[in-house]
Length: 186
Image (cartoon, rainbow, N blue to C red; front, side, top):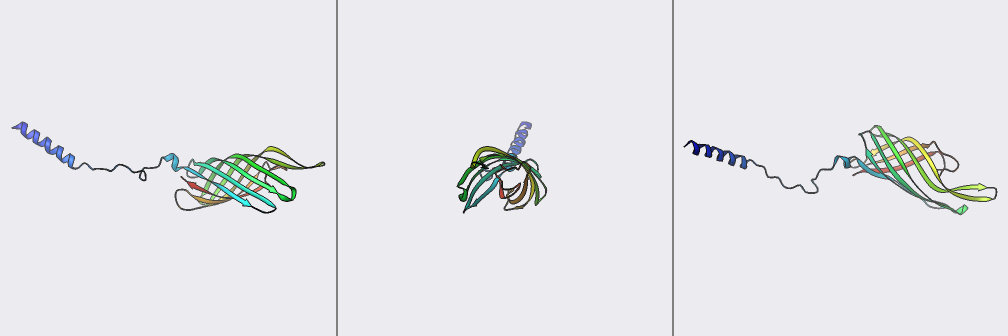
């Protein structure tokens, strides 16, 4: 008799436990949580174009990583087509850069980068106008303003930089560089 009571209690406990088991549907791709690594990655950069006597087309994508909510770092590549019809001058500028940003306020950031650009540096020699293909290093620092757009860490920005390695064979027209671009969180 004791055995029947014991089996009955075990059976009731099993049925009660089974009845309370919650069924869950398998996760769909939309519900799959992002990896913490990918939540910190962003892409972006800047595009530019100018047409006329001076023609310039610029494509400069970047990939970055938010190390902390205020500090990020990344890499980028640059390609520019540049020509001046008056001087029959044309060059393709390409290269890369590494950068770091510190954002002390939600709308303000400080930016530093090192870059190397390869281009045909124009020279006005006594024998006439010549060019020399070379690598031009740059060490740029400055700051800018950012405005969030949408969600997921996307934003637009405008920044002013100073090129501390500017010289007569720098691809920039002056040591001051203005950039406007966007970042998009993944």
